[in-house]
Image (cartoon, one colour):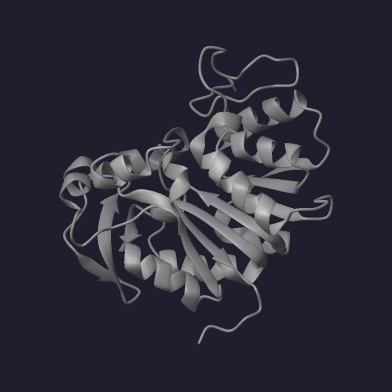
Length: 262
């Protein structure tokens, strides 16, 4: 199978990159930098025995950088073509603390428990997202990082048109909007090649932002945050009319501190 890299650009140990030396590499990406900051705060010391799962790890970019930080990293990826890229990267980085598993992220419990679960670009591909968050909480002892699209009841007009979202609806008791993953049987049967789509479900549900935050609390994280530095250095512009507005996408943090919510 041919190795293909769509994103991100990963720096290998010999100095070459998986895409182009002219493109920024993963370690400078704002989403990775924001994740690194949280990880460094929550796990400031030795990370040799800290397990981290990267769900839907695509071509292994985040997983490699987390392993370089010292975590014991397991990248979970369901598509064969993506897994080939992951193994290509692993063979060219000296990271014995990095491994990849071919599996559906819904089977994460079979891999045991993790101190950290990193879930970027995956929650919005689920048709039962709150149930998936509950599953992640059940296998996460400390920290969950979710980078995802969400629905916005007030400012969604741009995103609704851009992504073809439904009108406001309810799923699992939560308001949000539906997104079509596969419009036809033929599209669904060819889902192996749809690197940026769901796996088993033909449509997914984007939870309304406020209820996404509430869901994190409800499933067991007593400290819940939205992390805005993932938007890059110009947070205000992004929130007022840039990426945050046009794509309704952000970073959400759940931490288990052991302090019950009031």
